[in-house]
Image 1: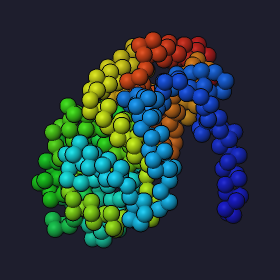
Image 2: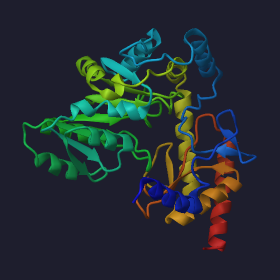
Image 3: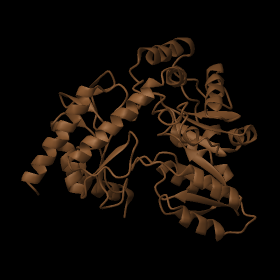
Length: 391
C-alpha cells in the first residue's frame, strides 16, 4: 500500500473512533492541579508531576533565570558546544543522589534509555520484563544483543531464560522500578540475587519511582537499599522538567558518552530544563513531606475507587490503573469523566493489550483533599450511569 494511502485510511478510522481522546490541548493551568479544557476547568488527574513541583515558583524562577543567563538553546550537542557548568552540576548532583559514581543528562527520558544501545553487543543477551516501558523495548531494537522477554514480574521464567544461555555470555536485565501502566513495583532484591548467581547485571528505569520511593526519595534502588549496575530516569516526573539521566560506574558513563549516538548526535538539554530539574531536586531532598503526601493521596484514591467497585489491580503507588475492559467503554468513560470535571488517561491497544484497557489516574502532592473527593465523586457518578445505562 502507498505510504500516503496507508496513513489516510488509518487516520480516518482513528479520528472516527477516538480522535477526541488523545493529543487534546489545554488552554490554561492552575497550580498544576487543574486545567482549562474545552472551556471548562477540570482536575488534572493524569500528570506524573508527582511532587507537584511544575508550578512551584522556585522551579519556575530557576528556569527563567537560566534563560536570562544562557538563552533558550545552546545550538549543539554536549560533545560539541552544548555543555554548561549547569549540566555538570546536575549530573554530579544526580549521581550522588542515585548512589553512583557518574551520570549523564539527556534531553529526554526516552533518550536516556536509548543510551544503553552500545552495551547490547553482538553475542550478548538482554532480558526484559514484558511490561517495560516502550523506550526499553526500543533500545533492544537498536542493540545487537539477543532478546529474551520474561513474563511480567515472573522471576522463575527469568531464571529459566538465564539458564538457557551460555555462562560466558554477557547478560543484561532491564526492568522498570514502578511499571508505568499497572503501577506495581519490581521485585528488585530477588532479581539482583538471581542476576548475581548467573553473572548478569541489572538496569532499572526509575522514571516513576524517583522522588516517590525510598528513605531519600531516590527511587526503587533506594527503597530496597540496593545498587544495580545502572539507573535511568526521566526528569519529567518528580523533577518537574524535561530530560533524562543515566547513572552508573564512571567508566561506563564515559564510554556511553562517546559511543551512544543518542548522546553524540542530539542537541544538549536546554538551560531552562536543567535549571528547573536542579531546583526541583533541591526541593525533593529538603521537603520529604511531599513524598509522604503523594503516597497518602494514592492510598486514599486506591481505597476510594475500590470501595466504589473499581479494580485498581495490585498497584500501591501513585499510578492508579482503573481497569475498564473494552476499548469503546474505556474511551466513553474517559469522555464522561471529562464532562464530570476530571481529566484522566485512557490507555487502550497498543499501549496495553486488548482486553486490558485502563483509565490511568494520578494525583500529585499539590492536590487537595477536596479535589480527591471530587475525583471519587466523578467516578461514582460515571460508574452509576454506566450501570444504569449499559451499552
